[in-house]
Amino acid sequence: MTMMDSMTNEELDSSNPKLMNESRILRIARGAGRPVRDVMEMLEEYKRLAKIWSKMKGLKIPKKGEMSALSRNMNAQHMSKVLPPQMLKQIGGMGGLQNLMKQMGSAKDMMGMFGGGEK
Image (cartoon, rainbow, N blue to C red):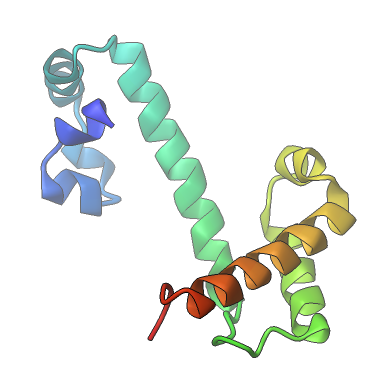
């Protein structure tokens, strides 16, 4: 988090690599008290996650109470195509992904019961 605190809003919101030249990366590292290598790793991870999120644009997120088994299965199939294979393996494969989505739907329903979540 400290590295991101050392960045401007424009840098955080932009995917423009020209904003991140060597001297700027060095200043971010100094401001965060971290090695330049850590800043570079964070930027690479950001690029990787941005690519995953852009592939997830077709994923339909249902409203509260609309997460049927069929829509969970369809979303899980879409997610399995988007996630890197090693991440899918860590989750436990397709079955683990479906279970995770089911748990996420249950957690959202529970939040609604206790006054949290969307209104």
